Image (cartoon, rainbow, N blue to C red; front, side, top):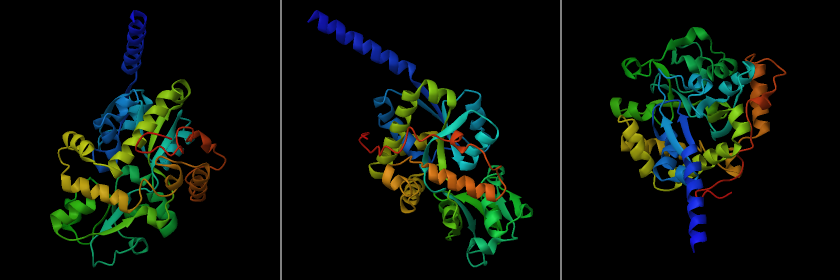
Length: 329
């Protein structure tokens, strides 16, 4: 019995040591909202802890550059908004890559007022559009190539709805599960909402990025973080999202139950996480073919040089395992 107790104590001490060492700092690319619900759900319900992880989630925002913090080693993982940013890692020879693609569709949208002749992407050619600096180097280039938009149309987007609400001719960027709801709440009309993915934009979104060094030296840690995050997303979408929502509201008091419910419904209705590759291979899935197709489209638009080794932009070693709510492969 003494030997058995000693062995058990040893195991518990080793387990505690491992858990204490496995602290993870994870940066979001915006403030806490339903689009990050799976991570908060994994934290709130103990899914991360079950996988031996002590996770700290740091919010992003208009004044926060988490990519810089990732490069500086102050974050272990971060959300990389879209495939353009992952290809930029390769183009600039930065040793980081995407390890999971949580969104199969980019939830970015353009929003317009109804009844103004701004009901589809083609009709927006030549008209002023408010977008952010990040968008200018991202999916804006896709719209330029497909619909003949030009940079002369760009107006600054300050993440404030007031300019849009004041001008019936205004057009601005937004997020599927956020701005449309806020516009209806404040102005009492349903805006025209155009999902970039519906225009044929095939890039992944909300990718999780990690350093090549971490991938090589701590693959088990990366795998556990990805598995737990995926499990958190299944729980958030298919189970009771209340635990995750409670943490989201604590982190971002601007979030309301109604807005969170709208965000979750938007994610589900449009298959943001569960369509595409994820339909067969689980949330987070990526394929070499889709990356190749995305790269081909961007090179045709002149955004990236031909001949880049795009396998440096991503790795599929941690995904395509059909991890479900129970964390089983």
